Picture 1 (cartoon, one colour):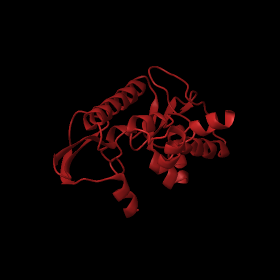
Picture 2: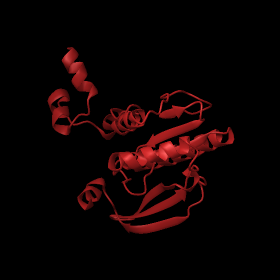
Picture 3: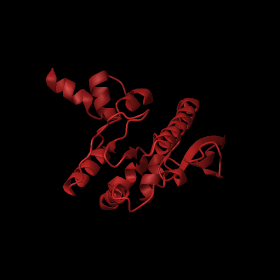
Picture 4: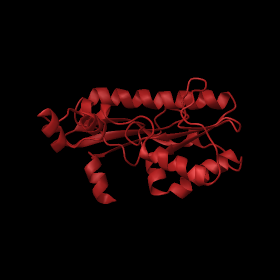
Length: 206
């Protein structure tokens, strides 16, 4: 029984879902299984910071936020944002099911990130938001950025971080992608129209 419970907590493939449940998981079930904390990129960043002698707290609630990595003495909050959940301009792909739901979810997440970052900044905190792909692809570079913020050798750049706010289908396999800056989440600064971009297609380009 414990082995089964352990397996059920792990990411599940469609084949394993059919084996255990007798059917494939729905998208909502798949998304529900994705961890919101202690992800692999977060853990990798923590280990890298610790190896440099940087001591921190994790998931400590302060104000209305819950940073992934937290330096109380330096008043620095670090977030590692997932590319799908937070609208990464390089990797976000529009789901083909429940499009209205996921579109609204993206807007909600974007506005919450902007609100949280602004509240922390107004309270005197330095906020750093890293994309998960930045941590995975360049761990040393991501760690350097955190250290520079903590050492006061760099200024936060979260207001100018580019994000996807909305993607809408305007024709068969043609979509419109709207981009904003996190510091101004309601102002569309660019809108591009072109062929639908899928996560699989993006993976093939890399």
